[in-house]
Structure formats: structure tokens, C-alpha cells
Length: 459
Image (cartoon, rainbow, N blue to C red; front, side):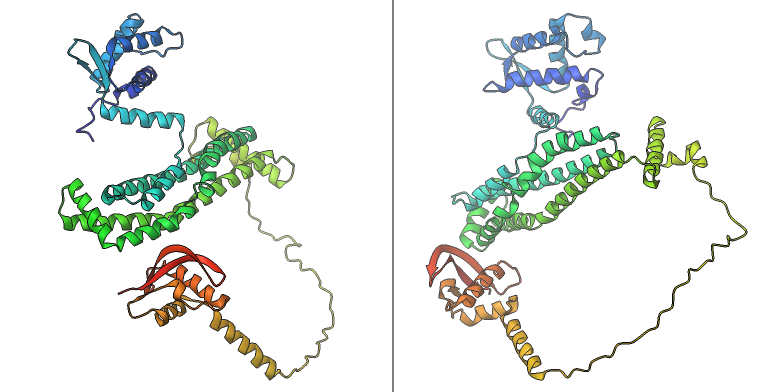
């Protein structure tokens, strides 16, 4: 990175006049962003910055060299400094007109900093639906599409991790709010608006990963078994990355598995997000309840003591360990020893005596017929219970010599047969099963409508 960015690139954002630098950068970027390219005549930008420095609310540069001049001098000085720090470059065209361009890396950094400043939230559905569409598409360049799937998956996972970190940040900030009004404002006007409404709620509804994940995983696994797809994708990657066909083929398998693993392990992040969202809202409500509690009982008095300790620590800017240096705590609690026990300390209350009358236990002979009948029904019920082993044996019994069969060819005489087909389809997603499934067209057979699928035994 340091071979690309100049050594003093971030100096304007750390200088005493950093606000003026940033506002000027944003104004220049807004002007250039509306052009077909990022090149704009220098005079146009000078006039834009001159108008900025003429405003009463313009930030101070806080450097004597620039503050001494008028607004136009400040504008020219700002362009020279931004060029010196590596944010812009000034070129002279064939007509001897100077044009200003932002550096390529500066454009990316400005966009990222602007998103942070504006608090923009990631549109998760954009990534999920893009991956979903790319997986379903038929293209002559599968290698390029696979790279786009991998990139969008990485952006999706990164976005979920950032959301998880954002909620943790809100939890950490909760302890800084001292009044009920501050807590409620942080909960409803900040957290609910920026986190729940913009991101968390969508993850549970329109952006729900579970809606798209099964088909995404299924289609990627199907592609990994297609020799034609692997060869085309390998040829694309070999040309893009300038590697051998064998290395590209390994890379294709690796990318497909990486995307599948990302979607299958995404539940861990989502569970953590759910947990932290619940934790934050519960903590906010409990803290508000604590501050609202005011009574003369033990809880109320402890509350007042803790609030007083907290105010003292904030006033003296103490760390957590500084609580032991607060003088008035020594007078709050006094522990002392006694050499003589109080006479009531060993007092034991007298319990009334009652006569114990045991009840007679009736001896009943077990009904063997009833017992056998219940045992028979239990065995029948256990026989009907489906598990992966039974389904795998069921598949192997009906698959033909060629190692595959259509689901529509399986027995379907009653509801129990149809339930078996459902289990065949569900268990076919598992890696440790002895067969795989590939979905086909929707059909209707003997009153049941379902999407037909091909069952293939693994070699």
C-alpha cells in the first residue's frame, strides 16, 4: 500500500485545519463527479473554492501562509497543497489549459470516507440477489461470472460482520448515557433508525439469506459436478490470471467450495447478530428501568449509591480501578467482628408434631395383553420413522443398473410413499449420503404436484 499512497497523503486530514481540507476536498469531488471524467479546468475549481472561503461559516485553514491572503489566494493555495499531498494532479492540455484530476486511489478513499460520514448502510439484498442471479444465469464466460459471485459473497459476509460490530459498538456506548432521555433517544432515534430499520429488519424479511441460500448452494454443487462447466471456467481463469489449465481447474473448485462454505456458515454470524440485537435492546430497557427506580427500599438506596459513585468517577475521570480511591466509600459500609454471639443467633423454631399415617399401597397385576399391544404400536411407529440410513437403503433398492432414477419413477401408492420422496429430496443435500439429487421440472402425478428430480448414486 505504501508503494501507492504518498507518505504525506493523510497529512491534510490530521492537520489543525483538517475541517477546511476535508470540506474543500468534498466540494472539488462534487464538482468533478458530475463531469464525464474527473478532469475539470483549474479556473472553475478556483472559483468554487473562492466562493467557499468567502462564506462566513467557512472553516479556518489555521496556517499563516494561507490565512493572510484573500479568498482567491486561499483557493489557489488549497489546490497547490492538495497536489503536494498527492490528492490531485494538475495537467496542461494541448490548448495550454490546466485541468485538475483526482488520483485514482484518492477517488476510492473519498468515496469510502463519504459513506462513513453519511452513515450509509449496506443493501444486503443487492449482494444476495446479484449472487442468486449470477448462479442461475447461463453464460459463455463462466469463469468471469464465478469471480463476480465470489466477490459479491465476500462483500456480503463483510457487510454482515460490520453489522455485528456496529451493534457491539452501540452496546459499548450505552454505558455513556446518563439519563433516561439519552437512553431512549439512542434506542429509538439512533439504533432503531440506523440499525434495525435499515439493516437488521431487512435481514429477517426481504434480505433473508434463507430464501436464496438453498438454490444458490444447490446450483453451485451441480456446477462443480459438471465437467463442461469446469473446463470452460478453467479456461477463463487461466486466461485472466495467466496460469496453467491445471492450476485454474483447482482454483475453480476452490472458489465454488469457498462460496458454498460461506453460505453454509453464515448462520453463525446471523445468530450472533440476533443475540446482540436482543442484548442491546434488553440492556437499554433495563438501564432505563434502573434510572427510573426511586424508592426508599434497599434497591432504591443501592441505586442512589451507584449513581453517586458513577458521577464521582466521571467527574474525576477515573478508570474502573479508581473506585477504591473514593474517600466517602470508607464511611458507607463498616464490617466489624463480635466476640459474643447474640442469644437469638442459635434460636431454632419449634415445629408442631403430627402423627404419620402411611397409606396402603395397592398391588396391581400388569395387563400383559395391553402391554403387548402398546409394544406392537410402538414398534410400528418406530418402523415408520424416517432417518438417513433407511432413506439411503430405500434409494438403493429402487435405483436401476445405470445408477440413477427419476423421483417420478419411485412408488407413489399412498401418502407414506410421497413422504419418502420428500425425505429423499431433503437428505440428498447432505454430503455424507450415498447419492445426490438434481432438480428438474415441476410435474403432477397421482394427485401430488412436486418438482421432479434425478437421483444418482455416488461412485
